[in-house]
Image 1 (tube, rainbow, N blue to C red):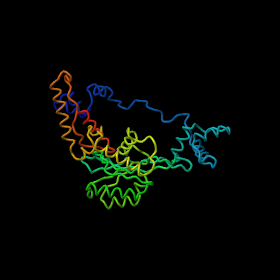
Image 2 (image 1 turned 90 degrees about the vertical axis):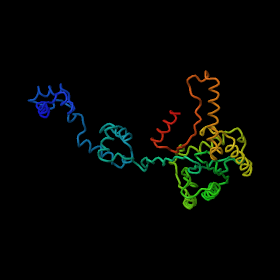
Image 3 (image 1 turned 30 degrees about the vertical axis):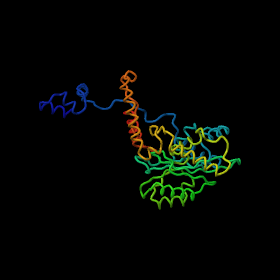
Image 4 (image 1 turned 180 degrees about the vertical axis):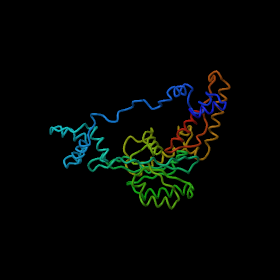
Length: 345
């Protein structure tokens, strides 16, 4: 009020002076009318409640919970057991509040508290051979309970199956040999590639990790029991096992399985139009041919629109723009960026 009076005496408008201080003229007039008593007259909440637990009652609850017969039980079990004995100290919620205040609201017994595992690093693939994903799936055999193990590595940017092998067991040695062959075949140099996988023993075995270190490949792992962190390999295995040519009967031996997977990989890489990369084949995208193919498709649609514009009216033709970036476990900012690109397209 003193500052505003000084401003008004100096020639300022009262409304503008109040605006600088963030109050209205009505607030100023109310303050001036009650200048003799500006104390806060709001009643507010009471400092205490009559039915609150006393300090003695709180200590009794802690003492009961720490007795040998109750020390490994949760309050939801302790309260009914006390009621069976004709005793009542408080509700279950009161027990939890008191234990929390005394820093005893932890899991009772030998169970470990829930572990918060951070989300794996977000990766962005903008060209082939910079980000691969791999996993192992089971192929059934004629012997019940025995399966062949299919190791398969896929390039996340192009969806090309860059390497695969079938073995009778899971081993980090097999995985490291497969990675050496794949890097040699595709000319991968040091610090060029990141390899993502789940947390299986072949993925985190000493032999595999030493091989990746020697090749200069950056390992990346999913969270435990979270298959969504490795979606590209999971999607590839679903395509493999649900395609029309997948055998209806188990594989007779490992040679038959290898022959069939060889046929599938050749079809998948060179004939299958992948929906995630605008319906071009993985081989076309891996070799950079998809750009010209998509431009030709756009030209065909534009020509059709010029010939019969009434079929499109005010709508644009189908979006055949190239997918320039592929995300693996994207962050929130990357998800927003990807959504904005889709809306713009």
